[in-house]
Length: 118
Length: 111
Image (tube, rainbow over all chains, first blue to last red; front, side, top):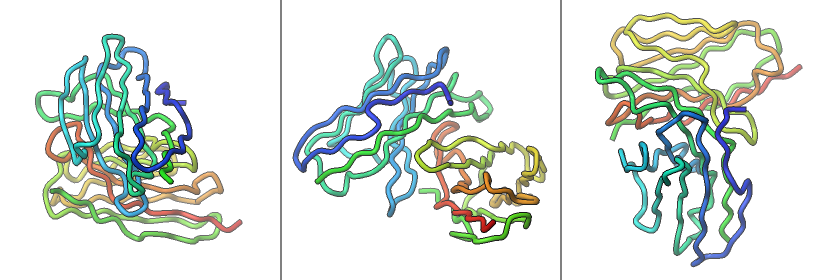
């Protein structure tokens, strides 16, 4: 158990709909990340938040948005869903944002939310 | 953007065999990470490498940071059934915390 929780575990919805995925980071972690894992694209970084502010962005679609709340939990909103959005969505958390010399803060991954768009 | 090429894509081995997999990049990485993903779970960090030439072990796992900083290797010795899963290499791409992942090596062990 990484200490990162994600809800729901599974989500089945229809094209055109909007869903919200929720993540609670490990206690004490200020940084939250979202990743998408699909069969054709593999694991891809979407977005990072640190202490409530957006810190880094990856290949996140405009239909997707995220936020981190004052209690540090995060939500990933996916709208106008398409069949191709079906994937596993992982949240990860870390203590910080890395060191000034480019050092890495270990990211701990949650169990994921499996999204199926029909 | 930065890409990591991982090979082999899959391995079918007998229990007790040693395993080797590698990861290459067209650009330099300052950190190499090896993760394992079990079915229905998120990736778990196995080994982190921070210096070119570094060799680090974690039990039966040994990973090396290539001296060119463009590759890394993971070896598993005397494989056991719980080693089954998908192994990913990863590194920070465009920022210390923005991870880029390889495509994964799926390890299957025949008892």
